[in-house]
Length: 154
Image (tube, rainbow, N blue to C red):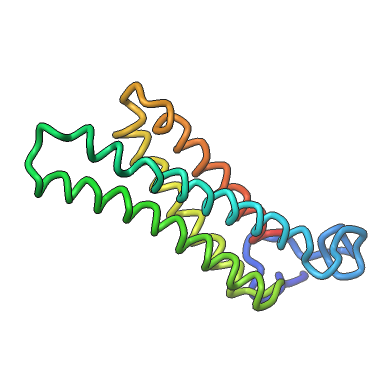
């Protein structure tokens, strides 16, 4: 019986060098994982920018509400953008520090879970409106989560 390698959950033990193992054709010191992580983080960061830019117009759309409520709307829009930027910065940070490592894998997985939760929240709320931006958001979050999960197992 062969035991699984420590720190690599859900991956069967290798029987020889696979494409993702040291000595395998596509390993190249975790380059596949790095590319997936950088692409996922970049899309999340850009989506955060796309989320922050229309904040003023969104708040202006609530002109018939109180000033306090408009401040709360602005806070929530900016907070979601900052959350996306933080996820992107964290993923890029652990990737730059050094791949492959178990800490980076778990950061990728936790970030993926957060993105899925944000996407589900948007799907249950904003995506039910006619605004296309809200309808696209859950798809973007799930795709980026998939990239990060792929990075954690590549």
